[in-house]
Image 1 (cartoon, rainbow, N blue to C red):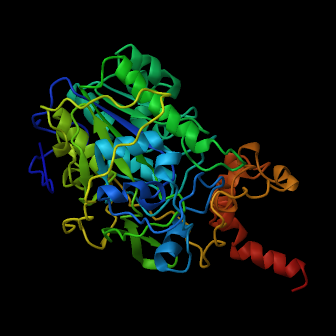
Image 2: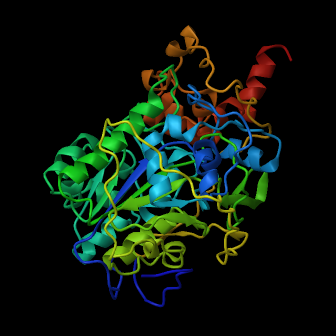
Length: 491
């Protein structure tokens, strides 16, 4: 198994790769991708186990029941020091007891990170090691599609079985050309199909599993006190289904989250890659973003803290190594740290607590281990995001599409798990389509013009071409629109 920094000498193309390395025979990797958490926010309870997390304040017995600004603009201002983000932590053992048990008994990665942006870029980095966007494309209706390689296209070309279980709207696989056409579409299933397939023992070797809205741990737009419990319990049920289907011993699970969610984290990540925006024409840190928790568990996974720096691209690298796939031809993946050395084929780890049982947490080590500094980051440093590799060998320009506003967002709500924000004003339903009524102001600012009621996709394109604005936020600050408003108000 690979360890340390992986420096591939294999030549490959994005479409097919080349030579194969040895992998674990008959092994399976299941990746669960949930939403919006930082390492400090979720896993203060791992401090007694040697994880580098803050543990110096009262802990919330319930998660905050509302969303926080967490797009690219919010993260840039957070990193710049003029936006505080939401500085709270939950009681790990109380709020997410199954995750806590897994993290203590298996591998907890305390120096993992994604991007300094919101959801879509994080999901795409975990699926294929690249992202063509730094903002969320439309979740419903017309949306872009990119001809980019993924771990699935690599598996398909290598004859390794795979399946994807996107959310009920096809997110995020619908953004990939090859995942929306045959034969790949035969391997795309609704999220509800994972449990019956797992119980039947028919899961393929690679599974990426997303959760439907309300079960992905994304803070709600309207009050839902059980949103974390719902997501936590669904993951627990999914793991139980694999166990019931006889798959525990030959499955490695990876559980992680897409982005930072607007929460603080106390450990600065490497300034590896940068992206340009209107305020930073020379570029501003985007990889690494804030630390994101990652738990690796299963019948052959070692116990302990993995303190190495690695990003969501390492998820793809790890799968490549565990299953003996060829290099994908994307430097960020082919040169990434592999977590495959956390697997020991001689191990037979005990089963986790069965779903629904009361969980007794293991006692921490005594004396408590001291958190270890990570090995020095040996990847890129301050490098502009490179152009993206496509399946046909062409390139796509590096993303520079995120709007970074001159002013930071409104400071986050305080008071822990206090009341959610007020419901959307009644007039909002007359201004935007139904799918956008409950979105936050930050999400509405990044919404496409077609989210405005009465503006079709064609009209939005025409308006964008005429004014150079593609989002509601850009339209609201468009100089021509502002000039018209000033003139009609009599200055």
